[in-house]
Image (cartoon, rainbow, N blue to C red; front, side):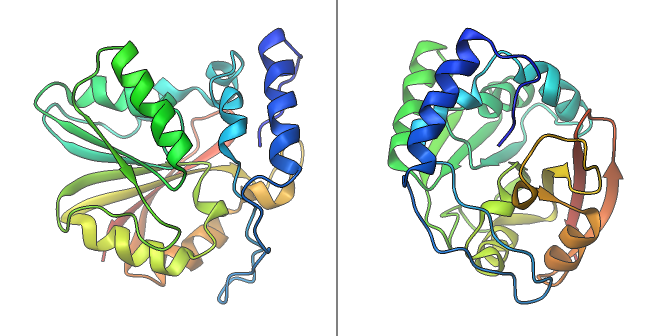
Length: 230
């Protein structure tokens, strides 16, 4: 969970919401990855949605710069895994255009409701909300050009099953992209279990039939890790 450098009115409201999350929303027993030994982070509950849309996020995460690195094309079919309230989903929808499609995927029905509300408010018609499960993205087989996971993969409680499901949904030349806060950098003000090293991601994801094809470090705090189907 990202902590702002300077508190603002939105940040204060978001922190209040996050207090509810840590009090027990979507509580889960912490597990560890059987290959890397990494401890899984808890899932941020829907009560923390204001945190996803905080003012500081544009500066701290540079979302448009991240999407620039992905070279999205008009007409592509993409997926935002862990879409939440749609912060990145809307941006992706604009990049792929009216001829393209974005699947906005989340495991919380409340987040899907917030996403639907946002789509109506912003008059976006090329997004398909998808309520997934912790072990299945619920996406059509062989249909997706690119999947984006922004600060999400480290929260998976069933990462191996999810990776298999996502791989099945990708086209033969499809890409799986993780944005994860750099565990290698102790100055980034995020709890350790909400960060990942490049080595951890490579070890875990490549074990499920992917190849790490590119590491892009243009963002202020996050790795952009681009995997392709092996």
